[in-house]
Structures are given as structure tokens and as C-alpha cells.
Length: 218
Image (cartoon, rainbow, N blue to C red; front, top):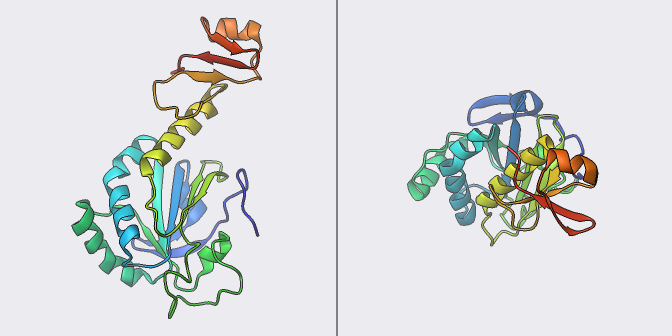
């Protein structure tokens, strides 16, 4: 199964550091960020989880829940959490999924169906594809997916930026240009005629017939 943007995020039941969750039920009416790791006690992932722990309040401000996944048992996650706090300076307040049977990794197309049924004996290199970020909307559809190499730490400020863009563009008929950030001008979508734009976005600018910009709506 190959997952794409706008697909329904596969539902699952899993054990986490905060108990059993049913993924869709856990998301509820929120946005969700699921980010995965190839193994516990790995250096890049330790810094990433610490970074997210420090940004959890920023995700919460945007109505987004964060959940981590690593292809190891929950008992390992609990021990790893102390290292994450020691390195990053923030306590991990979000749940971390244990996936020792590789079920979620396979369900989300991070590992092949024939990858086996246990995390035992597997190295981070075996699990290298399990470094993916999925952003799921309140409608349970995948809004963003990103895959990273093991040697490159993820930029979670960028994921916050994309969340800002997706939430803005879900509310207004606008799109965001390259390198956009909160407060920058936005693009009026083609669904808005020039006549309507005069009313909805007074003072908009026409850079090209197909490219009109306006101040960010509130």
C-alpha cells in the first residue's frame, strides 16, 4: 500500500508510553503529527524528540497533537525518555508508540510487508525508512508526508510553518508562496474571480494574470 496526500490515514490500535490508543479516536477533532524513528537510543532521534518536547506548546497552540513512534517496545521508550530530557532539556509530554512487531511501520508503508514481525535483532540501518512525518487533519486525511535520511535531523520549525499554512488555507481561499511565514502576503486562489477579489481582498496586487497576492487574512 502506498500512502498519498488526501488518503485516509490508516487507523490502528497500539501501546504507547501513555497507555493504549486507537489512533483516529486519539486524534479526535485535532490535527495530528506522527513522526517515526528507526530505533530507540539513536543520536539524531534523541535530539529530534527533545526538540519536539520543547515545541509541544507550539503544536498545542495550533490545535495539533504530537505522537512519536519507534520500532521498539514501550519499556525501552520509557528508559529513552530520560536520555531525551537530559539532552534536550524538556520532559517528553507526548505519547510514544511502541511498534515491536512492526505493525504500524508496515501499515504506514515505512517497511515492506516481508520485513518480519519483530524488532529484535534489527539495526537502525534495517529500519532506515522509519523516519517519516505524517500530518493528519481532523478529517483523518493525510495532509503532509515527509521522509528523511537517518543522518539529517528534522526541522520541526518547518513542520509548524506548514501547519500554519494548511490551517490558513483551509479557512480562506488562499495559498502560500515559497518560504512563506506568518504575516507574509499570500496568493489568491484561481477559485476567486477578480470581481470577487475586489470585495474579499481589497487592494490586492496582480503580479501576473494568474498570480495575485494580498495581505494575510485573519
